[in-house]
Length: 396
Image 1 (cartoon, rainbow, N blue to C red):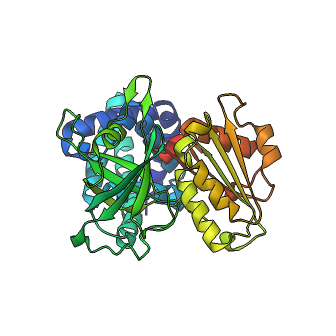
Image 2: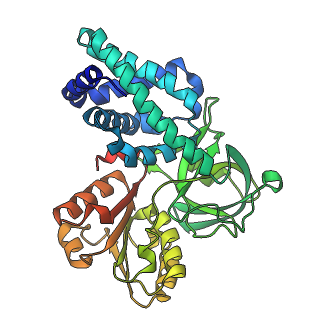
């Protein structure tokens, strides 16, 4: 139990965190990864350079400060982040390293304003916050389909579009895994550990990729988009596209994530299901759609997908075949090459009022859609989302 003095001091730092939070977390990552280079095997350097990881951490720290009187309020976010941590193999022994460097960054950025009382209060608060994460993650490790990294073999690779490849991975013979048993819940992702041959350092590169089937009977299927932005080529996606062939070995941690269909609602017909995506964001929604069609093809289903054009629209033929099995479904494709982007007016027209909405796409897409749904007064409890990268950075 945190002391009243500690809670008061932490709450008093909220304005400072609102002003300097991202600067503090940027310094934190820089110092920690300089002092503990072994952690470069865990943390995504691309998210560091783009500012996504510092922004996500700053948002989390600020939320903790605001809710220091009742940290249980943060549990939904802790679980979301905990899934990422478990998939990356973040362990309890990493938390003291994080704490030491976070406090150091606060002191470095704030200077004399970071008094001993403030540093001591945040040290105590960090210990309590870290324990919440450690406890949640212990449960996730216990419930994982397997521990650590397991060797798989690429049984098949198939071009979904010119820029997206679907990989099917089967476990090695000595893995102890049985593909006939459920290894994941539709909507979850696997984490791939690679050491790209074009990387000029000695560290691993880890990335999360959504599973794009509802069953593991034929192997774990995940889709990878070749990332190219402003002249930058994604390190891992480029490696997987250009260098990983059928028959090659790959290392995966157990599926993770809390983005999944409501078990009760998928058996009912009263609440329509809306699956809303942009680009490769359709990947986990395809898995969900397969599951929904298996469980209850009578439920009203609305599939809305934004893509540049049909040639760059992933899984469109598979989606159409799945929806053909349903008695009450519709598919809407928004091709931004020659159509307006999804707007509030569009959503107001297309979305049933009482629908359960699942969304996946880029940060920009996610933030825009969530804002539109809030403006339309769509129930927060009926909006579920999975952005690419650190989830807290959406600010949603």
